[in-house]
Image (cartoon, one colour):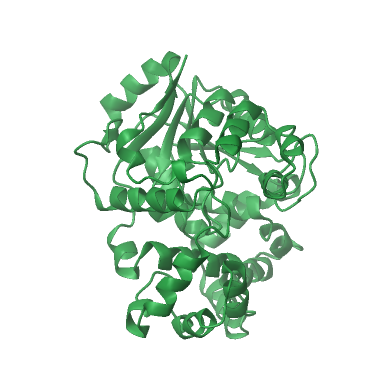
Length: 394
């Protein structure tokens, strides 16, 4: 049995994602495709626009056979931890033979050599990295420039600055030898491109939805009825929905408590405390804290950790996923589920009643906070992780 894994967010699932799943199945020769998908929160440090069950349904309609939840501890983490968490979960299933990921075409030829260089971290590389950090560069930029300098590959830093290439590199670094990489060249719009087209980015679709251009957004989706239903009933979490909750947390926390939040090193808690006194929006808060050294994405993830009370001690205590929670599957994938049950090194969770795990408790908290920010009051109840069954399709 060949099983191809995909680590994803699908915020929301668009035609580019459907293209990738089709190519992943084709290039790997997979009998089944397993998606490990972010739940309530995303790697950019924000809540997903639609809930995880709606997005799991989109993925199943778009070519996935099984959708598992990437625990929030990893879904809202930096690229290396996001990749390591997803790869570890897939490896723990005991049946995954391939991992597919999208990447900008011009980065594909150098991914392998760049991954080997970063894995070795020679003294010369570490020195070049330290010099970049001493200049006040953000860690990802300093790391990419060090890789370009040591490898001699012209333009490598610019290639690694592309979001998909950066994650692809982390996937390669995290892959065990028994899982083969299957890179797929990205087609259509760029990751941050806000222009809708035949293969639009998720950024463009979310922008259209937030601006009220519903029909434009739906035209870019292979399963528009799922998003239409969610948008119409207000099962949507806008980016600024929990600004007041975040500012309340910051304005009522003391310095030691804030300093203990994951990612808050180097005295950043002082900058957050000061910015929270005058900020009126989440975006304004992050921009007030931002500097040359700290990227917007990093600060956004820290703000999310503040809201969810994710401490550095919690992160250190839970370095890898400890369970595989099923969000949805196709009935025709029953042989895959049977194989996973026989080989899985992790608990395979289909019913959450009675299930207890610190990482799962964070997932529940993240989903409850997602619900609190939903547009419709009818969607704001707590506890959906215990009342919502996995999505099942034919």
